[in-house]
Amino acid sequence: MNAPGRRAPRKAALLLGALALAGCVHVQLEQPVADFAGAVAEARSAMRSSLQAVNAYERRMYLDEALFDPSMDIADVKNGKRTPLLAPVFPPESIRARLDALDLVGEYAQRLQDLVTDDAPARATDAGAALGKNLAGLGERVAALSGDRSSQGYAGPISTAVAVLGEMWVAEKRDRALRAAIERGAPAVGRIIDLLEQDLVEAVRLLRRSGERERLALRVSWYNRHRAKLAEDLAARREQLADVEAAVARFEDAASFDPVRITGPLREANDALLAAARSPRRPEDLKQLAAAMKALAARVRAGAEAARKLQDAKEQTNAG
Image (cartoon, rainbow, N blue to C red; front, top):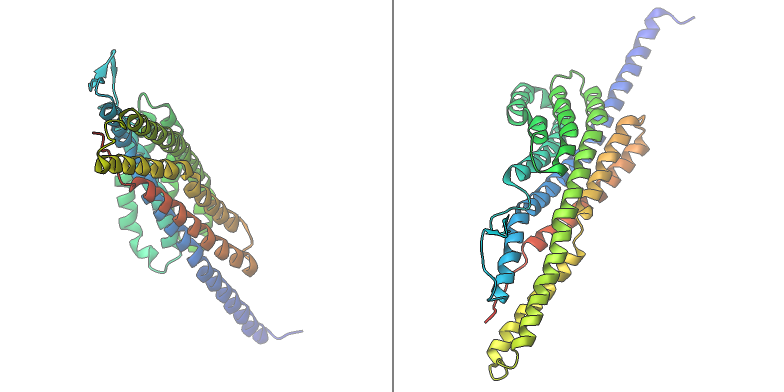
C-alpha cells in the first residue's frame, strides 16, 4: 500500500500536467479564433460596401438608359410608381438593419477572440455595457420593418446572437465560456450568414449581371446606330469603342462575381469552430482546425477582393 505522503506528489504532477494541457489547448485555439475574426472582418467590409452600393447602382442604370435614349424623360414618379431615381431597392432602414446584422457577426467573432486572450475579464464590464447599448432591440427593430419581407428572417438569429454575446462576459471559466458561446452562437451566426448571402445573391449578383448586360447592349446599339456619323472622326470612334470595352470588362467582372465566395468559406469557418467546440480537442483535431481556418480565411480574402474590384470598376459614359 502506498503511503499517504507519496500520493501528494503524484496528484500534484497530474494536476500540473492537466493545467499544462489546458494551457496548450488555449494557445492552440488562439490562432484559429483569430483567423476566424480576421475572416469575418474581411467579409464584413466587402458585404457592407456591396449592400451600400445597391441603390446607387440601380440609379446609375436608370440614368445610363436616359443617357443613350434622348426621348426618355427623367422623373421620380412615372405611371404612378416611383422610379429608381429616388426609389431604393433597399430602403435606408433595411440596409441599416442588415449592416447591424453584419456588425453583430463581427462582434461575435471579436468576443470569441477576447475569450482566448488573457486580459478579457478586465474588459468584461465595459464591453458588456457597450454591447447592450449598441445592439439592444435590434431583433425587434428588424422584425418591425415594413415592406421588406426578406428581413423578417433576421429577427430570430439576431436575438439569439445578442443574448449569447451578453452571456459571454459574465462566464467565469474561459474554456467553458468559449465552448458554450460557440455552441449557442454558431447556429445563429450561421443563419445570419445564410440570410446575408441570399440578399447579396438576389440584390447584388443578379442585379449586377443583368444591369451590366443591359448597359453593354445600350452602348453597342448606340455605336452601331451612329457609326456612320463617326466615320470621319477617329478620336470620337476611339472614345466610344473604349466605352464599349470598359462595359465588356464590367460585365465580365459582374458575371464572375459570386457572393458565395465570401459567405461560403465564412460559413465553413463558423461550422469548423462549432465542430471544434464539440470535439474532445485532441492535438490532431486542433492542428486540422488551425490549417482549415487559415485556408478558409484566405478564401474569404480572395472573395472580398473580387467584391471590391466590382465596386471599384471605372465608369466611362461618353455618348455623344
